[in-house]
Image: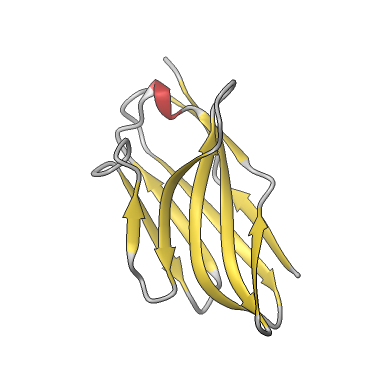
Length: 119
């Protein structure tokens, strides 16, 4: 099993920055695709950004140029640097790891961290 723990959420004003981190613990797995998703009140969960084990990144159009996803393979962590935050970025942010365990592909989620952007 893989356990994911997010950190770094909080309350910020529009235009400010925030950095989220996600640490994965467990054994016997290899990372395939890691990412951040978010869910705003009353809305469906949506993709924010992903990064592959090889470092290829993908971003939602709404965050391109403002958010940066990165990974540390040695520490098994991913970060999401969020700049120029907007009120519409307010949501619970979830970390996701898609991993290979033996011959199976499995998905794991963190419990989420709340980001509130408000003046």
